[in-house]
Length: 89
Image (cartoon, rainbow, N blue to C red):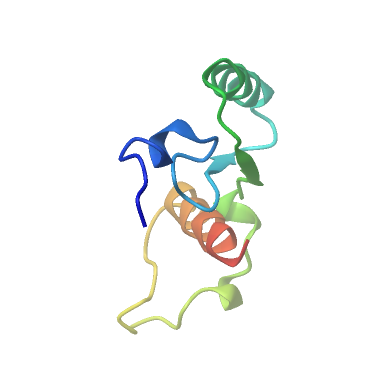
């Protein structure tokens, strides 16, 4: 296949299937700024709502002591959950 090397970076997703942006629903200022930047750059973004770590039940985390257990602050737990949600999108 004979393609221009710059073709992928010239499309609306920079050669990726999608570009995700994790954004806390309460931060409409950041969403607005990101949307404006994307529009002026001709990028297509998909917003994923951020999750507050203190809203996640402890049962949703890996068991204590496992290699995947999360012993961190609420912010880090929320970030983890938000990224897991993006992986499922």
